[in-house]
Length: 541
Ligand SMILES: Cc1cc2nc3c(=O)[nH]c(=O)nc-3n(C[C@H](O)[C@H](O)[C@H](O)COP(=O)(O)OP(=O)(O)OC[C@H]3O[C@@H](n4cnc5c(N)ncnc54)[C@H](O)[C@@H]3O)c2cc1C
Image 1: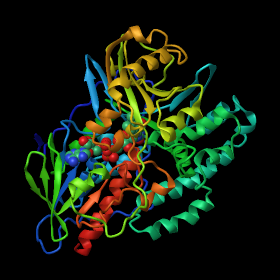
Image 2 (image 1 turned 90 degrees about the vertical axis):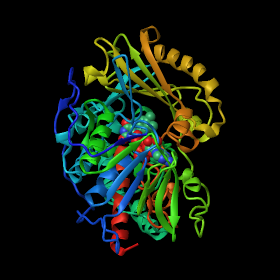
Image 3 (image 1 turned 30 degrees about the horizontal axis):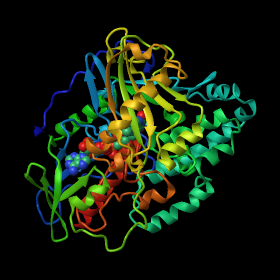
Image 4 (image 1 turned 120 degrees about the vertical axis):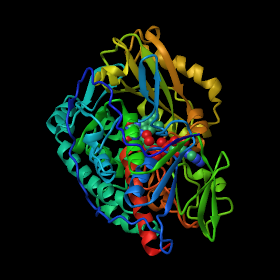
């Protein structure tokens, strides 16, 4: 067990090296639907600062820790792993550096809002580079590619290269997705859905915006050409959503990229984790790693302490859990909901097979972010989401951070992350047997149809994550990569709650809660949960 007590020093950021995108300060300071609240932090009648234990140091856990500290609580963050960041941790070996999970930073102003709450700013803590294009999408067996750019004229030219008629519809599509983004994300992403009636109130507006129909059907109303449709409907896969099943609310993910761009933080996404941890310790919080929460100790219907794996008991007035709702039964044994709040258990998302490859050469055909779509896009999505079988064709996302920061690999090399979505462990596959076979198939495909000839012999360091890593190391139910499927039936009130419905003082945060997964979504979950804590403290609950 390691404890990081409050410290002052800032960690120096790694050297820049090669820089493809330009360095800029992203737009900041938007506060749609959000009012700043005065700090609170005293539980009624105690006459002392209330003690909060945040269980889990993923983006959600660190974000709420910063907010609770700003609200005047004493905060301890308890992380079971030796490292912080959860899905967003870091692997370093032989001069190669990889982010394990997220790599694309969107809505940077949300990070800035959080950092300012923590007494700093995004710009003061990190060096960000905007990526243009945001990513390249290529198709096997087709020499064309699509560079997704923020510049609408550039985007229109890209669409026109596939279908001029579709290009004429781009503006209408952007207007429609902007409206969804403004309401569904900027407004409703910041308010709690603690009652089913709140959800009912949201529906008419989403119907008016045509945001209830499946995302792929929504995109099909504007675009006909199959490649163009894929360019605008795949984004929900970033958070584990099947475009044919998630509501068009997630078309907002396209718009937010046009509005705010995509960014890279020097050192990778893990440097954002490090910066958040700095704000926690600088704000007076304590971070404990290598010890997990085994049980939330209760008394009088509310939380009293957290008992850890090592047997320690940390007194707590507030507990915020950043892990998986599937663990609730063990964490708060016997705390049953009076009424079942869902008819069916939450359905988990697909998982991911990740190869982290350190190569002794570069692959110039890859941009910083490249998506390679195989020959059966729809079939692939069906296999990994609905059918839960091993994919017969491939669609991958490849991260090559040396395009923006040379120091992420030794000179002349690449530190590539290849992300292949796969079915989660409900498929019943034995991943100890599957992984080596799939690895060979995938590298063959990358060298052949995906165009990375010479990849196999260039690999000098290799690591991987499988669904077993998600389940056994990160503790996610079914080894899911993105938590809970973002379908309409699992949104807002019907997701994992932000506040426990039975146990007083127990809250949840992270990608499985409202509004959902993805780095910006996870930061918003912390905002929603912090608001509930504040309301409860004020009301003396
Ligand atoms: C492969 C991949 C690629 C992605 N790409 C992107 C991207 O490019 N952009 C983007 O915005 N999003 C992306 N995402 C999504 C994003 O990474 C997640 O939504 C986000 O990181 C989730 O954060 P979290 O706080 O919910 O949980 P987690 O990251 O899962 O953190 C939870 C933490 O809680 C700890 N924990 C659990 N139980 C206990 C316990 N009992 N005691 C102590 N600790 C406990 C775990 O060890 C873990 O550290 C990606 C995700 C994956 C998997």
